[in-house]
Length: 287
Image 1 (cartoon, rainbow, N blue to C red):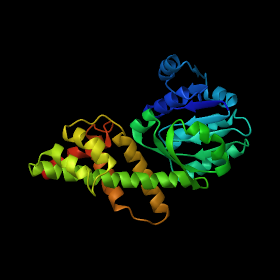
Image 2 (image 1 turned 120 degrees about the vertical axis):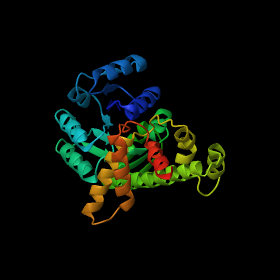
Image 3 (image 1 turned 60 degrees about the vertical axis):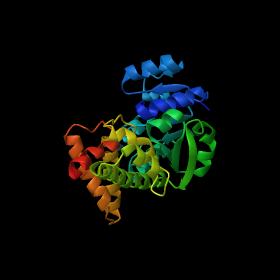
Image 4 (image 1 turned 90 degrees about the vertical axis):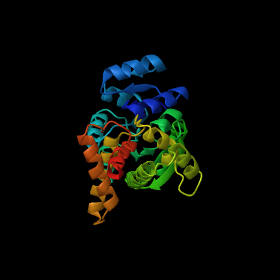
């Protein structure tokens, strides 16, 4: 089956490269044409002149954009020319409600949507080791799984449309909690005058060990915040989680605090840094 990708940010570019290496990419499109032109030369893959051209030319469309509004704009453009039976795989992080709207728009053209957000950050996209949580028709997922295997190391079917995004919301809430815990603990260790490299080493090997501590601990304590996952994007995702929780009359105090902390950092100009930049605030609080 012919495959195209829409959206070539840090995540989309990594996925595009792995799709191309496995022989599973035929067309690409990006809102900023210069980015698409650079990647077409690197991968020897054609750039579509428009979303509509891409949608009319392939069987599988992978979408990777930043926000609910962006996704619905892309889906409406796809809707104009998509062929019946085609499959759209949305890897963006949006609300379950938006995923359902997107599926309804495509169903009008007898096309299918899988809401398939991913976890693993820029490193996972680069290395083809993303974890994907999928909502939609399992039979449709089975058709496209050989293509998705080139960008993911784990693909889990979660249930009907919206289930993928619901699961991603769980992931983002956990990520917020881990970020709060790790940055606060390491700021405490610094205030105590402990050798931070040794703290990270020994704690990573015990019950409190986790991916974030292992991969971001040293960089944050060295004031290095090159983004694997931009703070402003996690802020956007947590606002989605908050909105979803409100619909169920649920309370998410940890999410609320993280949104407040991230907003302060964004106001200070750190929104494009990695989420580990939360360490900046923890250091101030424990100074």
